[in-house]
Every structure is written in C-alpha cells, then in structure tokens.
Image (tube, rainbow, N blue to C red; front, side, top):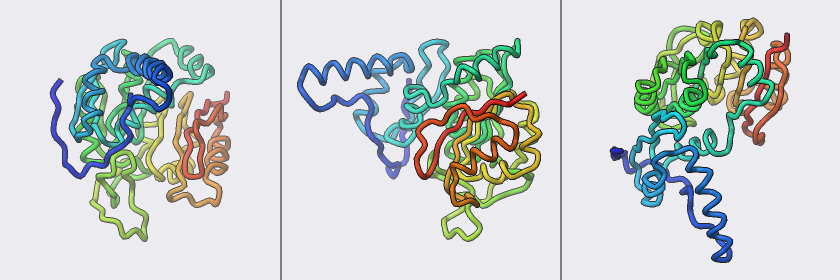
Amino acid sequence: MSATPLSASAPEVATPLTLPQGSAVARRLRFLKEYGVWRKAVRELWRFKWREHRGRPVVGTYHTRGKGVAYSIRHATRDVGIFAEVFIAGEYDLPPAVSARLEALGRPPRILDLGANIGLFAAYCRERWPEAAITAVEPDPENLELLRATAADAKIVVVPACATTHEGSVRFVAGEFAESHVAAEDSNEDTIELASVDAFRFAKAADLVKIDIEGSEWEILADTRFGELEAEALVMEWHDISCPHPDPRAAAHAALEQAGFEVLCENRPVASNGTIWALRTR
C-alpha cells in the first residue's frame, strides 16, 4: 500500500508491537501474543508495524483480515491508539444484550456514527455487518480526508459537519485528531467556522447510535428529543469538557436512564471520560 507523507508537526504516540522488557523468553512470548492479536485486525501487519517502528508521520491504508474492509490511519499519531481501542482492546465490542437486540431486527442495522473521526468505528461496523446502512458525521477537515477514503470503499454516507441540535455553524477547534472539538463560548483557542447539523435528523432512523463528540454530547443529551429516539442501542463516550454538571459520569448515566435507556456497562471510566453501552428499555 502507498504511504502519504504528513506534516512533520504531527504528535508521536507509543509504538505498538514493541519488544517488551524482561527476560528474553518472556519478551518473545509476550511479543508473539501481542502479534497474534494485531494480526487478526490488520492484513498487512508487517507493513503497519514497520511504519510505526520508523516513527514517521505518514498515512497508511490497510484492510481488516476478515472481510477486507479498507481503512487509513496516520502513523505516529493518536490514530494508532484509536485503532487499538477499536480493533484490539474491544472498545466497541457489543455486549451480548445489544448483539441479541440487533440480531432480532431480522435485517442489517442502520448505524449512525456521530464523531466519526477517521472512520475506524464505521469500518468496524462494516466488517461486522457488510450490508448495514452507515452514516458518519465528522467536521474536522483533516479527519474527513481519511474518513472519505474509508467511506468510498465501504459505502458509508459521510456528513461533513458538527453534530449538534441545530442547523447552522459553530466555532471549531480543528487539527487535534480525535480531540478536535466545538469551542466553548469563552474559548481563546484558534478556531475555524464549520457547518453544524441537527443530529436528530439522522438519529430518528438509526438502530445503533454511537456518540463521541468531545463535549458536544451534553447539548444532545439535554434536548427533549433525546428521549424520543427509537434506537435500540447506544454507545457514547462522555467527557468532562463542556459538562454543565459537577459529576460528568453520573450526569451521563442519569441522562441515558431518564431517556429510557438501560446502562449495560462502561469501558475504562476515568475522571475525564468513559464509554457507556446502553440498551433501549421496552
């Protein structure tokens, strides 16, 4: 696969598949175990590994091992960590109750990805449900380049805008990879003006909704229409940024339960964020 140079200013992240510390035997065993896990997610693993080892900010295109869904990442950036969360750590592995509910539909699910970033969750869904209808909403111009490349191969509908509760525009802090976000009203950060869309226009037809929009989730959770969603399941990363409540985690749980969702589990909650799986109660 070709590799496209990026700006030299891209931040570096920890390199995957590095030889761990300890005895020679222990290092080899741990390396082989890690390699086996990664090999299940990347067909072109040695190319992937080599580019990470070199530590140069280039774009690499790869394929899932099962159904060959193409996706692109920016090496030596946060993208690699996001890839590991999605495909290696199982951040979005469906809880059994969610899997059963979506299987009971008797058809491929309709999926809405709010905060699609470079399209890794969308690629994960395409790998699991080849015939699913997937809509991905993402505003960051740099992320959109990679998302569109993935979407073209995987037949994903891309909406280039910020997911909010209104149509219009917002001030946006771009170029921060997965951490790009809508600027706070009193923010002194460098911003650009980008289009915003009413997320509920897309959510009303979705069976599975994923929300990871770096603080903008609070506006959506507070909207009365959130309780009217007919989605069977939802996975959401809450953030402390822009949260109007002193305890963001408790506020996220309360908002979901008030809207008629049962919280099933939460992955890796820390003080600043956590990922919640929830199921619509009947």
